[in-house]
Image (cartoon, rainbow, N blue to C red; front, side, top):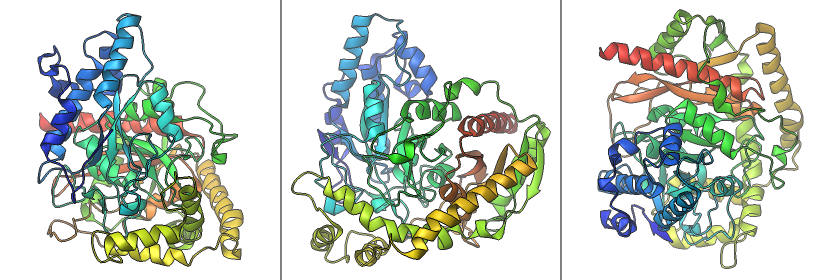
Length: 534
């Protein structure tokens, strides 16, 4: 079922052509493929329901994009594996729709293809996490969110590349299995990490949306630098079961999309309680579709707290922030500049880092223990295989990632006083403090650049336009630590044609509100961009 696409054994354009060999002649469709891949999810739903396009035409259009944009030398290299049965599944969906009759409304994502980061279990495709040690790991069942999408009739196109095992260690978007993912806007830059392939794929129109994971910024940072929309929803809204874990205190599952409306549609489809993920139990869930309130959303009358703690890393990012704030004020928002307490500036070294070190080994080993026979069952066996395949970390693998795994071998501290205090005292205190601050100021949301700098340069390349004077990712740790919802949307472009995302963060449970604010800002930004082009 699997078509593997990686830099070490990367197949040529012929591989995707093989996947298309049995496809209908979609090039003669009434809707040209270049128009199909521009459609948003709501437009695709209407077109499919009205019979103006078929799922096979839709899948075929995206498979050709993967073959021509992603795979060649100098391509984006976002897609790590293609589902060889995608076309068959699309045709089966078309046949069912024909039996039902045109015009019958389908589920929001039925017949629509998507990609998933290569740390989601998907039956029929290896779930490698980008690691050679899991290159032949074939899951026996689907991740919870994967199954939800498939049950609704969505079609998995394939898997996307990632920073190996979802940890970049300074080498963003690189894995031993998938190689280096490039930023579609500038080949000297990465698509950040770790959901690099998912963000690059959506930006390059290789799929209408892609699943990703976010522990300390791994959906939001790649979305920020690729001009896409990424969201980390309230902790527990979306299940993480069937996904290779990093640190379940902070791990989140979500999507990368081209618009806020598409983000809401996908979140509606994937959210839900899962008996295998305790974080999903007892969560207040949306009472109406998240996408339903977006069209009338506005910034007028909203109170936006602009966070100034993280300025100064890149002057262009700071200018984009100021311009965005001015535009929101002009649109009627009440803007208040604030500085968060110092504790919120150092959440990675003081909270998330120690928790991640403590949790990775036991949680990763729990995942390994559930793999089918023939796969590594614990970290030591995993490392034994990895040592053989990488000559003890001297080839193929990111050296920083390998060093981190070696250190993890001797780390298991989930019963330490420090770890227990972080979970039982520190994090609840930070949540209360931030909630109290937002309620006292009656802020609808906090606002800041998603990351402080532009997309990192690909290792081994140079780009004199890249400027980063300080740690760029501190703001992203707020949502990761508190579990509050944050969405990033494009705010402009910096030198080198690099998109810069801006974020809205709201209190826990206010996912609808943060999406509405982002949608209003997105319309405002697009109108500003169109005005500049006139």
